[in-house]
Amino acid sequence: MSAPVPTLSASDAASLVLIGPVVQLQVQVAPLKGGKRPISWYDPAAITVVPAMEIDSGGVTGFDGEVVHHDVHHRDHPLSRHRGENGISLGFTSHYGVMRGEFGDFLHDGIAGENLLVASDATHTEDEFTGGIVVMTAEGPVDLTRVEVAPPCVEFGKFCLRYPRDRKADAQVAKAVKFLHQGVRGFYATWQPTAEASTSPRIAVGDLVYRRG
Image (cartoon, rainbow, N blue to C red; front, side, top):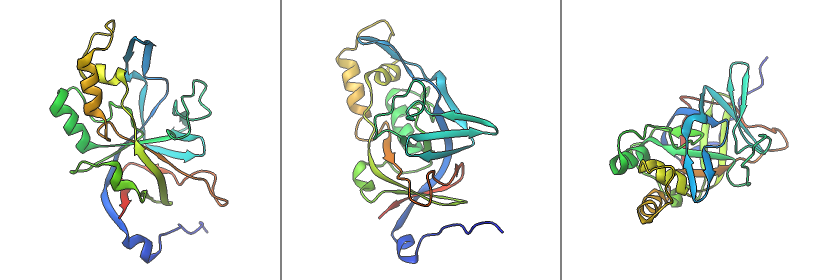
């Protein structure tokens, strides 16, 4: 007999506000920034779409059949960019609409490299997520806390402008980075292991994402 799937209490469930479904899961299998400042650039080639992922205390791991991919921000990745607060990242399709409106249609959904891309008709700010985010999976809820703005980097700002790789950033790039702030670029979040589970339930495309109201 399979183990029972953990569920939310009625009072807990009543506090949830639906955002939308997960429409894409992805990991960065290698760093996306190349060169050395001031001559540096963003290259999305290492973004790898996966059908499922788990979170542990070190960050995100993607699964594609028997193939396992640690995200580059996972503590155990050989080129780890793990800092503590950046173990998992989220973005929203609505925010890509905002970015395309400013920079162009070449910025397709997922190109900023977030781990979870969530479908949403609304734009979102950090203040909405003070209560956290819940992903409802087939194995039970995944609680994400400490949701904060993922600061956009100079390299991604240059990428959005199609700025030459061999040029130093200027005021135009600074303006683009400012535009991408306040969550337009995405958010970081944290998952905490428990005495019962050292990894989160497995997240899949189609799982519904909520914020705590």
